[in-house]
Image 1 (tube, rainbow, N blue to C red):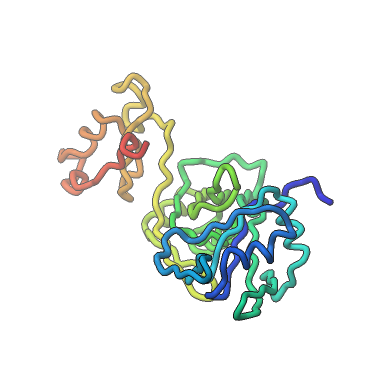
Image 2: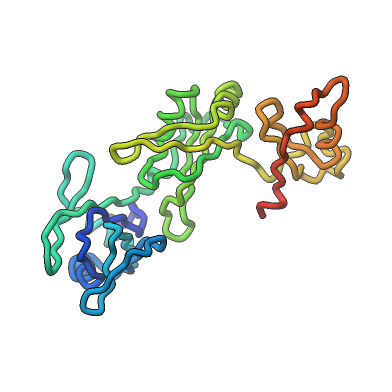
Length: 265
């Protein structure tokens, strides 16, 4: 028995029969350990059988009390290709369901641990499918825009389960700019594809790139310009200076919209 935690305690179970109840799930999975059932909160199409709630979404999440329970569960599944499956029975059906664990080692990818990363070359991806691994994401971005140093999947601090967002750091500034300029990336998603929006990753501790703290008492900059011609951090004074029409600044700069970090606290 391994004492090292390998998986998140939260497990995705997909392909559930539409007539399945919480009692069915308890009867099937309780032998691996105590757990809670989490249905998709967005689903409004729910029915009941014998006082038990049914789900029409076809999937649920199991949250085990102990990580070792997930290891026991995975040891009893069977594999088809890269996927894990388990047979499950309800009052009206018997079928295999997909068991999709999240392995903790899939949260991050670092190409070279000794290489110093430049956080200013980092992008943010939201609405990320929760089965996408960090190394897979790094490969997709590398093939499209250039060398990737780091990819990190944002996870829940309690369960270490993906939250649907990621950060990717490029090795070169040109790759970072090219990604921001393209704005979208298409990734594979369970036999189809999904289009994700690419945004600059905004940091909290950056000095103004124009005055370097001279006009703002060295307080970290509160504004970031996401326009491809800027991609700079500014204090309020320097934002006005750098985005007004002058001989050096074109009229187009006045159209830039700032990202205000104070509005996202």
